[in-house]
Length: 115
Length: 113
Image 1 (cartoon, chains in turn blue, orange):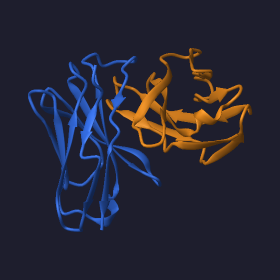
Image 2 (cartoon, chains in turn green, brown):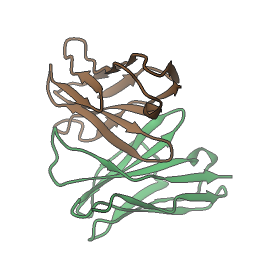
Image 3 (cartoon, rainbow over the protein chains, first blue to last red):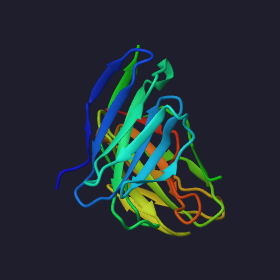
Image 4 (cartoon, each protein chain N blue to C red):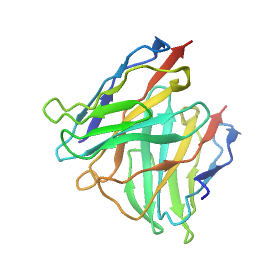
């Protein structure tokens, strides 16, 4: 069974540009969550999608947005990039069964560098 | 709101040393607790979990016990190996209340041969 796939693996952008990151969850998983990982802040929750609907959202500005398609693939978009957006963006998928035993499966991430 | 606090790193140990990485949490409900591990260049993967008080999660020689009285979930291993070098994240899930899985900032572990 293929794991969570994130593309691209590395991305270099300049301030003011926008970027789109892609995540393909494990087959059969309908929940996709996005996290931002930085050395100073650790993992911070961005948002979660389930069956094409945003189910939860973290404390990030509106420049960060996402969506999920009918095949459960998800994209996140960051507009008007700032230097502080440089980070590893991780996507995680989980099965439909939410609850105490829920397990997240992570992709390897997209390393975004903003110059 | 819910939160997770884990010890600052990096932690550097010699091979075969005893490991403890501290994790404490704040939650209003009855969360599940997890340890995830991130090896260099990879995403996170679940190491172990505990879903209720006094449960002990274990995997690959690592153990952690869910202590409600001290709100802690410390990670331990009796004899570490070079291959254990990674970043370790403590996490909390309280789906009935906060509805998202929260992670600590991570603790980087270096094991010297």
